[in-house]
Structure formats: structure tokens, C-alpha cells
Image 1 (cartoon, helix red, strand yellow):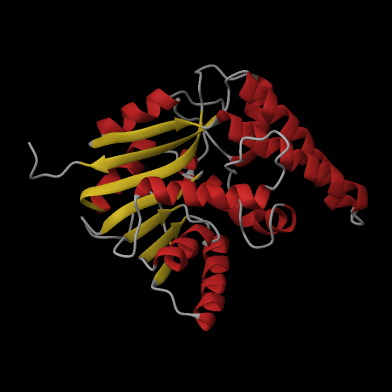
Image 2 (tube, rainbow, N blue to C red; image 1 turned 60 degrees about the horizontal axis):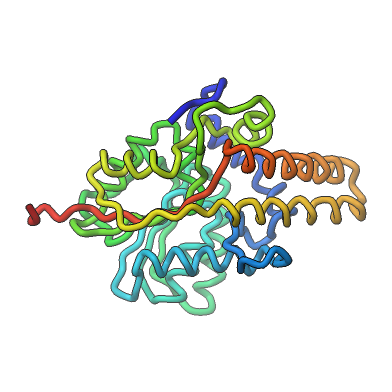
Length: 287
């Protein structure tokens, strides 16, 4: 793993996501869906919302979540994935996020869901490096595109290992840094844009998880899906900019569209990627 020029702290990450929540909700999705899409494989597929929902379905299936699961979603953001899992499978769950604004949004969304049919879900504000849970609590720890933002990644892996029960599953999608050296344009449009220091390659991520005590069940390279995500979002931003009445909103959309184009170049240059991982906490009773 290599770090880019600027070193961001948890405070930097928290303040960025607190500050930008309303902007992202107004553009990406007003329901709080903010993660990468798993597309159908057809280059003409431009349904971002369906692709985002497919990401959740694929990750849940890979993790083996069912009604007996007790799930922790780390970096839960606006709470959609945890609510989806509870509604889809009837499992218990908790969501943990560094952003107080996103946790507030998640709690409001949960309250709306509970009025229809109560769910056994709780959302908490907290750090992935200091999880407020006892050892051996959860059957599953999951995450979508959030762990890369943790400055102390080995500590977050150790915490995920600690709060999982023996034999528990750690399943997540995350952004990748396929090669060590990152160019200035990729650093500006990809890394600095979301206060990301740097990450692992697909192989490097697996090694880091093994160092934390996990055994790898699967690792998928999803480069084509992240390229399609930013192709679709860039086109959407340009279309919406044409009809935006607010000059500031129009400028933001056009700048975001420019970044989407640069992000696709970064993917082609192996400076940015996306992967999905499933790992298992070794059972202490096993040799």
C-alpha cells in the first residue's frame, strides 16, 4: 500500500462527509444510495440505481447472510445497505459511521421504515478503528466502499476481526490502488477529492486481511463495474447541468463530470480500481 502526497486524518474524512451530504444527496440519489454499481455487463446499461441494488444483492449472497445473522455495517453511511439486509432477510444489525450527518440521516430513514414494519437495527456514530462493541459479537461484518477511507487500515481490520464471532464472515466492497505510483491527475480527481490517502491492490488487500488473521474465501476484481459507474454518473451530471437553475449547482455538476472522465482515465492507467472480498475469522477451536 502506498500513500499519496497529503495525509488525511479521521477528522478530515468526518468533516468532508458531514459537509457534503446534502450535495451528494441532491445529485447522486436523494434516498442516500452513494456506492458503486454492479452493472449487468452490457455497456449500454445506464441504470445506476439498479446497479447499486445489485451490488447489495451480490455482496449479501457472497456473505451468506440469512435470518439468523447479526450484521455490523462499517461505514454504513445513510443506512441503506443495513436496512436492506434487515428487510430482505429479517436479520438483526447495526450500522457504524464516522459521519454524524450520515448517521442522523440513517436514523431518520430507519424511523420511517419502523412506522411501516419495525426492524431490529441500530445506527451509531463511531470509528472503524475503535468499534464500540464487545469481542465476538457479530456473525457478519460488511462494508461498501468505505474502508479505504480509514487512515489506519490494519487497525480497522483488527477491529473487524475482534468483533466477529469465531468463524464469522467479513464481506465488503472497496476501492483499490492497483499500482504504487499515482499521477498528479489521479491524485487530485480520485484520492484528494474524497480525502483518501491510498489503498491496496487486489492481492495486497488479501495479504492485509491474512495478516489480521482472516482466511480468504473470495476476491473479485470489479474494474469494469467501477468504470461503468463513473461513465454513467458523468453523463448524468452533464445532463443535469444543462437544466440546473442554480449557477453554483451547475458548476458543481460540470466539475464532477470532469472528475468522472479523469477517474475513467485513472482506471485505465491502473491508478484506481474496485474489488469485492469475503474473508472468514478463523475458528479458535480449529488447528
